[in-house]
Length: 245
Ligand SMILES: *Cc1c(COP(=O)(O)O)cnc(C)c1O
Image (cartoon, rainbow, N blue to C red; front, side):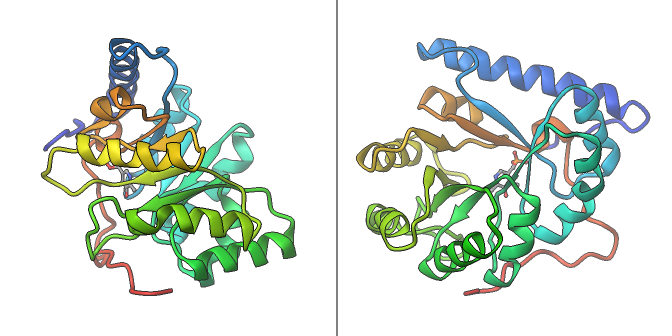
């Protein structure tokens, strides 16, 4: 899908895209008998030029998501000082050796997905007193290349997070398999959340956020529909997440 932004008037394009995405979220919610503002829009700013991020800020957007700690620091460390009401979500694969940096920058970590990470988070929260909101990522299509806890053990893992590690979990997150009809996966995630008493569902991206809102998403993570196609920095290697961590 090519959602390109004509250079020269990027800022108007981002503002127009934001208006359109917000409108589609509201319509999808209302169409499903939900309140128009029931889903929070997280603008995913990974691999986007800073001018487009600034355009979204100028338009009043304050909730953003990133999937790499280092890039997020480059994007946001300075902007944090200028916008006191920012809310930053981490939506990538979090290595345990990046936990302290992630806790220092982000307000929400959406990818708690293994005991080793849960332990590292608990330890660093205890050490630093950091305040953080946490979602458990579920590998809803059981894809080997994706992060997340398998659907079959998600409930047990969430119980462990709460009881063994003392972590307060506020929701679940998923990325359905690409090219497949996402609805059954969204429904599966909603079922898991319901069984463990969680009401926050982070699901839906550029290709499927309206479907996700109809199926109960409380948080949608939209990148390209707002900012246009991503532009990795010149010479950057593709981002393969290392196994384990
Ligand atoms: C990149 C990314 C998104 C946004 O994807 P778009 O297709 O650009 O909307 C959402 N969630 C996660 C976890 C991502 O990595």
